[in-house]
Length: 95
Image 1: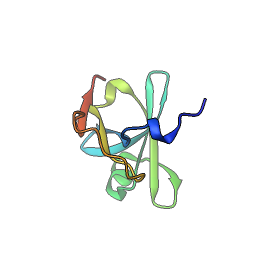
Image 2: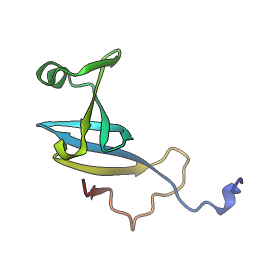
Image 3: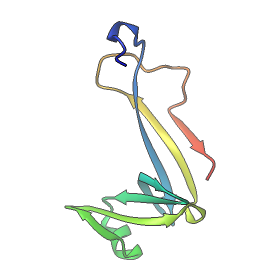
Image 4: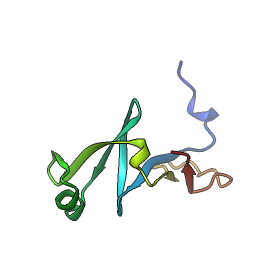
């Protein structure tokens, strides 16, 4: 079902992030009780022995219980619709 663009009042991007050890990661996928997390931080790659994903991007899969915190970051999308100001820009999620 397609929604006409005239019925869309606002839009925004959402990135899910987390803290694992002392590093911030992007959450790429949820797999059962684990998360696949990504970073371009070379120090995290070296210290945590992360796997190689792509040029300059590293990944690992960790159990949710090892994640310190997880949150969503919201930002204005690129389609010229306003960000819904009643939504917080950052919202923590229970792990």
